[in-house]
Amino acid sequence: MISAISLQQLQTRFGGELINGSVQFEQVCTDTRQLDSNALFVALKGERFDAHDFVGELEGQVLGLVVDREIPGSKLPQWRVADTTEALGQIGRMCREQFKGRVIAVTGSCGKTTVKEMLAAIFSQRHNPCVTRGNLNNQFGLPMTLFELTSDHDVLILEMGASGPDEIAYLCGIAKPQVSAVNNVMPAHVEGFGSVDAIARAKGKIYTGLETGGTAVVNADDDYANYWLERMPEGVHTLEVGLGHQWPIHADNIALDDNGCPTFDLCIEGLAYRVRLQLLGEHNVHNALVAAGCAFAAGVPAAEIASGLQSLGGVAGRMQELCGIKGAAIIDDTYNANPGSVAAAIELLAQRRGKRVLVLGDMAELGADAEEMHRQMGELARERGLDALFTLGPLGAAASVAFSAGRHLPLHSYRDRQPLIAALTHELNKNTTVLVKGSRSARMELVVQALCGNAKEDK
Image (cartoon, rainbow, N blue to C red; front, side, top):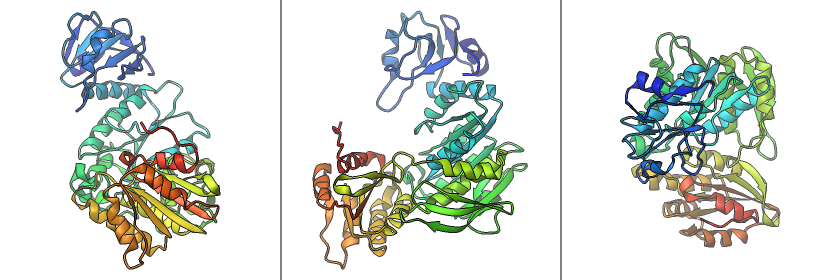
């Protein structure tokens, strides 16, 4: 934190009740396994846990508590509130209000973490950014990022995720970004939204959350670009990025090297800068354009944007090429999956030389059309000429059937991980590229570890 906050300040501003007096704190924790005697502990509740069950044992291990009911017998200062998750966000909001630097927020169905990392690489050249760590991008994680702000930081780069219609608006109310972007909208977490249109409406709240003078960076190539532009708040600036020459920031002369890394001209207000990304896949050009738009809106010179984009190496779990057993190339794209990102993975794999094998774990949270979307991925893999498709999980069977249709190919559809790994091992040689992808619930990173010869225990 930039400066200490007291329970008294929180109670005065947001209500609730103080028990056992007040205390000042500069750190916050929410995990009983990571306690700090200098921190305030916020007792969160979820569907399967309630930290209130343990807070009675924390005396001497933390400074104070945020709870939704009084903890009998505890002498620790307590701020009793109606909702501890909301209170966590309120503490985060006070930390945000202490920060005077630029705040950039990015959301989207695919690639938002890559855009965040691109922005971090750009700003790290001459600034000291505070950046969302890992996937701390929801109502629990975003406040934790705000707690990490110090007086040394001059830029805040936030990734915002959502699995429901109101989450982006809630996060913007806490973070108050000055530059915002929706990277794209695709079928992802459809169960929580109801439809792709609903996803677009929810993601678009990152724009309606901007205040007068803020800048909305819009991916002009997204199907919902006009929808967002038509609903932009008065007084908010817009900056469109895309592949067309009509946009202020666009890409030209795109080429892929033998490994699939793109090179392109980054064109910003009439000047072109040749950029070679160290990331696999042409889809990363779009990610780079959104990052460039956000950085430019925040005042970064164009040449500095280009050099920052080139400096970013691979992002773990996202199109990261590794050395597999028997000399095979293993592309780890296991961080998550939805139809849009799987299509991008298929396109990348189709451009590789030698034998090309896609390994697909079930894509989660796709709603009633989940089986149909898996079937479409199998068809796309067949149309793009991939040599083999291996699937893991009950939904993947539809993809396998579609891939093999009319080709008299064996079905490589598995319900368990170990038989899948055993079958894949026989496919590996120095002329084979295997791309592994799936939703987090499929735990496809364990397949990657096995194919690279460093399998770990599946816990």
